[in-house]
Image: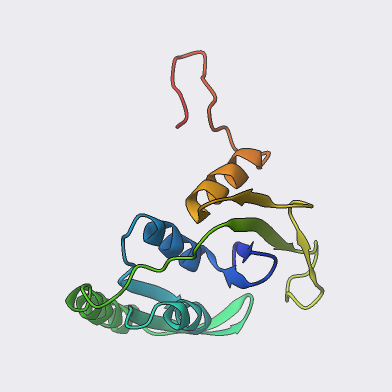
Length: 159
């Protein structure tokens, strides 16, 4: 079950939270060298980043059900995947999505727990920017639950 699904350039590409993190790092020239999660997440990210170290520590059976490896086996898989990714770090290119970018967040419809009943775009138009990082930052500032750029009475400032 994806927590967030990002639509780039009107459906040209879709990003999970993991591939969005890799793309944001890629915007800075930083390669993502390891991914861990269920088989669907690992497959999605590995399909976008050839050579990435990976550990599919569980098999997705439904949005709310998975068959997991034992913790000891999962730790072994993660250790080996990280070691592989670090060993290949110079051969793994940063995951970059060239601009300009139009970015939107997609959510499943209320009550659509199995994700078969459709999705809606969080924003009618999305946001446009020259880079993914700029578009992501703009989008975050429009989300109603964010407190970015807020100064609290005690002097604390959110970044």
